Amino acid sequence: MVGGVAYWRWYEWRDHSQDEVILAAARRYGVEAALVKAIVWRESRFNPQARGRAGEFGLMQIREVPATEWARAEKIKAFSPVQCLNPGTNTLAGAWYLHKLLKRYEHTDNPLPYALADYNAGRGNVLRWNKASAATNSTVFIERMDFGGTRKYVRSVVHRFEQYRPIFKPAE
Image 1 (tube, rainbow, N blue to C red):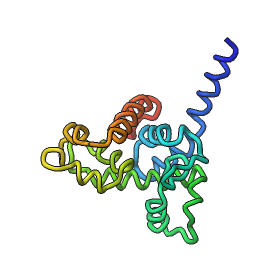
Image 2 (cartoon, rainbow, N blue to C red; image 1 turned 180 degrees about the vertical axis):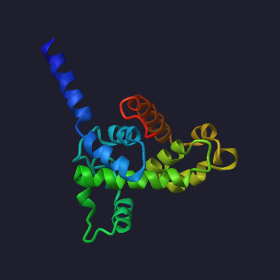
Image 3 (tube, helix red, strand yellow; image 1 turned 90 degrees about the vertical axis):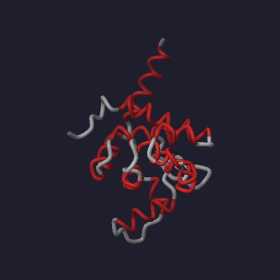
Image 4 (cartoon, helix red, strand yellow; image 1 turned 45 degrees about the vertical axis):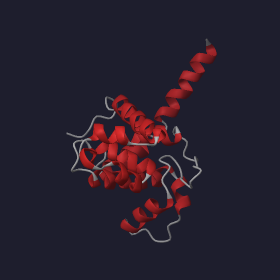
């Protein structure tokens, strides 16, 4: 019983350990905090020191190119992607990039699956999958993905996003 309570407390602490930086980044770039948190959950399980096999950094597993684009857009001098191991920097860069991706697909019925697929598998794959009706119909787009891992990624982030929404209500 004691072990279960300790695990629950640790789980609750971990699940809320990055809320402050998530909220700040989401507000700054006009992205729902619940979505940023869902990506952080899926990418790093709230570990700010996480590193990916393809060179991703930190909470949102942001890659060097988008992190550098963010720094350039924000006019940050002497930026190094390793700075993305800082939770505040990471969530700012990640939320900026996510905002950019959501805007890229705003012509669709639901930009979220497209943006998440782009975040996970890259623009080239999204361009391959979004042909014909999949170009604007997110349900067809998801089914067209030939990377099972990306399809699972999109579905898991969307599911977690819906779980976090009651906690982080979208701005009115």
